[in-house]
Length: 199
Image 1 (cartoon, rainbow, N blue to C red):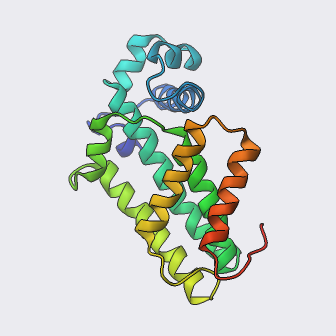
Image 2: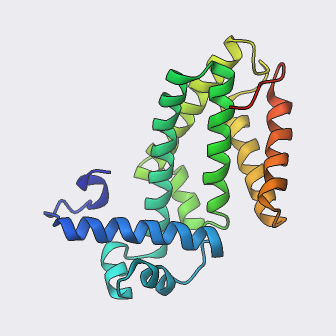
């Protein structure tokens, strides 16, 4: 993350301010993963070792914090797609990426309507990160389809919708990690043109 991403006002940023910002993001990610996106922001601040006022200086609203977390998650997944393309065959790259996408998707159950609206707003930074994520999915999927690993009648929007629906169902059912992994494996088997050995 660069300073421009974290501090849209363009003001100079001190190193301790950047560290606090990162601590807040880590604490928020853990708290929201455990308690949902409506978890107490005081708990996020406590875990980060800062006051609630400090949290609000960095993220004026819950939505701003969630948007930043989502943007970082999308950007990491986009970068991860390039790494997987370079290191694995196309089918294995897509399967590994789907597993990582499912983990990120499951973290943010119950996003506020304002965050969901930002995903659809072409003027928001969250929208551009989402578009980058979709482009990565499209690239991975096209490569896997050309190699014959993944069924040809699937598009990137359907893939993303299926993974997000699976992540939502896993969280709603409060399944164990093993049960969620089994459900994800069944989804992946349904996408494949032939079995793919897990990485």
